[in-house]
Structures are given as structure tokens and as C-alpha cells.
Image 1 (cartoon, helix red, strand yellow):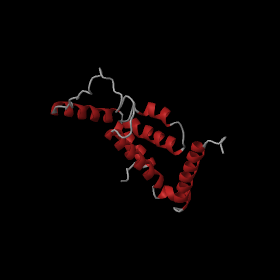
Image 2: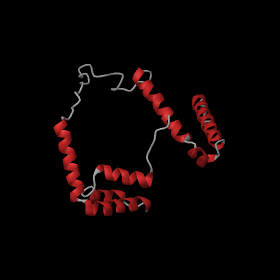
Image 3: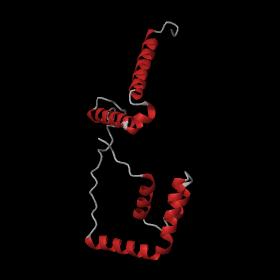
Image 4: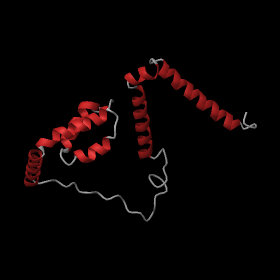
Length: 156
């Protein structure tokens, strides 16, 4: 024991019990790889995240400055009005995008290939990305990255 400290021993036992229970749950799913294939770890993280978000919002999980001990002189969070584009603004942006694609048609495929290769080689993706954005649109880059890395889908 920790010099007779009952509470420290009790807390240590509780943590150990919870850890062993989690190890058993992972082991019963075929180990770490088996649990990953079924999305076990991701699901547990999402459950815990949702649990603490609910507790934070209903006030049962106090966070100083967020939901308890708020500044009495502080201002309430302001509603920000959503800005909407006019049809002319939308069409103007689509025209600029089409012009960008036309101007960079010769180089965009090359840069998208370099970006994909950097991902495959586990290289410095950011360095390639900094150059690729000069020749490729966000949509092109996103599609290229989805093609090599897949797309995250939140499982519920």
C-alpha cells in the first residue's frame, strides 16, 4: 500500500479494474487489429465525446468559465447573422473557378499526382500541398486525397 493511504489504493484498484476490463473487450474482438476493423476504438471515443458534451451542456460536468463561475460582467454570446451570397456572387465565383481550371489545366494533373504520391510515400504532404494550391482547386485537391486515403465517415 501507499503508506496506508486507503483512498489512493482504492482509486488505483478502480483504474486497474477498468483498464483490465477494456483489455478484455479488445481481446474479445480479436485484439487491437480486430477491434480496429470493427471500429471499436473509434466508437468508444465517439461515445465518450458525446457523453461529456451532454454533461457539459446540461451543467452536470462543471467547467469554470464555460458553464460555471461565468464572468458576471461578461457579455452573452452574440447571434451572428448568416451571410448569404447573391446569385450574381455565386455565378461570379463559379466563373473565376472555371477560369482557374482553364489557366492551370496543364499543370494541375501533375501537381495532383505529386500530392497523391507524397501521401502514398508517407512524405511531406504539406510541402507539396503548398505548391499544389497554386495550380489546383480545393475540390481537385480534396478528390485527389480521397482517392488515395479514403473519406472519413462518422459511424453512428
